[in-house]
Image 1 (cartoon, rainbow, N blue to C red):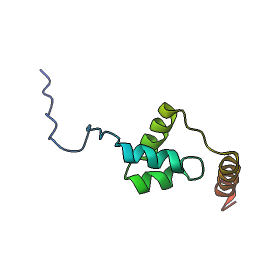
Image 2 (image 1 turned 180 degrees about the horizontal axis):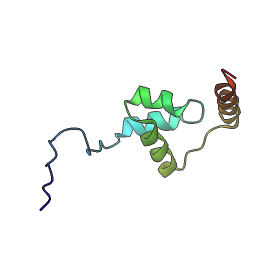
Image 3 (image 1 turned 180 degrees about the vertical axis):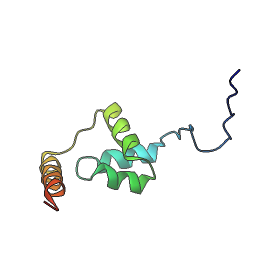
Length: 80
């Protein structure tokens, strides 16, 4: 017989609802800021920011996408 440990109450598995203020801030920042930066400002994970932005139908601006591409290339080629 297998015994499973009960989870202790805490943060694990708890999802914090988005407030109207957080959603407004996400909408304001999403086109021009990185998901990591927004996550830090809102105290959310980058995945939570991405998921909520997708649910709201938000898109990154073309300038931000270009900058992200350059940042990714630079990061990949560093150290080679």
